[in-house]
Image 1: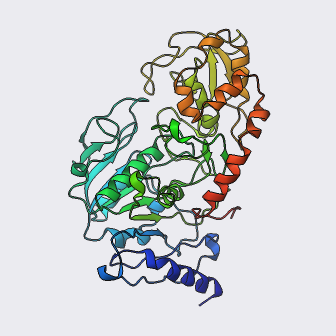
Image 2 (image 1 turned 135 degrees about the horizontal axis):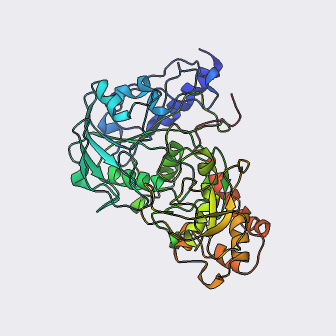
Length: 433
């Protein structure tokens, strides 16, 4: 056994005292780059119920150490197949839940004779085509005949009845690394419901397309909402699997309960590796440029400025009838992603950022500039802005005339504390392979 293997085995044995009575063998993921991850599988000896109090919850990271090239968690079937054997499985996913050949994770599991019994769908629905904010009804998947339970309709948290009849829930959604992107809020509610109903949750991890960027104001608890539930910055710099570990570890679920959690990790992934999404994560994030600009431009959703909903350049442009009439203008009109876009049918003057260099931080320059130049300062902000910012301070800072660098400086203490807290939940190393 190599020194690297012995270290992993020791770490695993220390961690195993927190595990429940799962009768399977797992592989422990190493935080080293995958070309070094050639250690042999470490077998987990199942504990009996008498050895393991019911209040203790599993938190395990699983991967396939034989994979020396990049793959997402869903691709690592050999690592998670034992967890699904002879189980009734629910899958919370959408169009982003695909494996390496772009097959739906639901179709893939069924092809492997996994007993998938229910599909759970987040905002935008199972196929990801519903417009922003559109409520989704329960239904049935035409291809598989499986029932689809909406988590963006009558309820956002799975009910006990909706979880009844499954032995394990899989969560497979592509996040974009921004606090107000609602898939991490759906993750919170899924974890909470699973914890309350004693259903294990397995998160299939996927890279964060905004990598390791950590930036923005920290959300203050009194401004918690579905577009920001936890005291984190706007850009959290974590994968969704790492984020699930943080939710559990910080006891952010109701009453401090913890979820029986397994994260199926990516292979051969490091935090600085560029990652381009295979499909749109939602109708109004059509490409990598929009995803990169999303965190910086989304603040405009709490103002009278359009971010291009109702155009084909969503989150790559911004403009308003109340900004100076300059060279760039667009007119939002209803389309698939937005049936009633802000400033519909009006000339919106602003900037085209579709070719702007890739950001490595949250950029406030356009928000500060738009407020300075608007002819309607009294109507610039609306109540949604505070939910997006997670604090009243940002609006107050802009209204007082603070510059973007001055505002950024006010975040530093909070960001230092968050990075320190975040460190213990990270799975992947820094650097590039």
